[in-house]
Length: 137
Image (cartoon, rainbow, N blue to C red):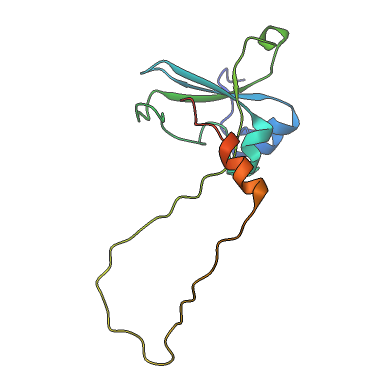
């Protein structure tokens, strides 16, 4: 019987199984000493249930190193209550991505019409913008 853990497909720590067990995901960078804890149930909504713990981010978001970045699942203990800081999602940010391309001739046919739209007044959105906080990291 080997003493190393199995690395087979059936024995991988899938995020859906880790979330069903109520586990935490601990992410640590050995280079810059950054440690973050996440609830696995929160990460399922971001990465999907078939994601494997250990392959979620792949690199440290602070220093960018890949070979000293560790992601592990673990059960919460009674020592974690009131002492372990859990990183929770606070909202989503829409980021526009741009690409440079060469200008081509306009397509023939009916031209696309752009209309001036009046902004929608939503008081709940305005209140949400006032109460939104920056990411502390």
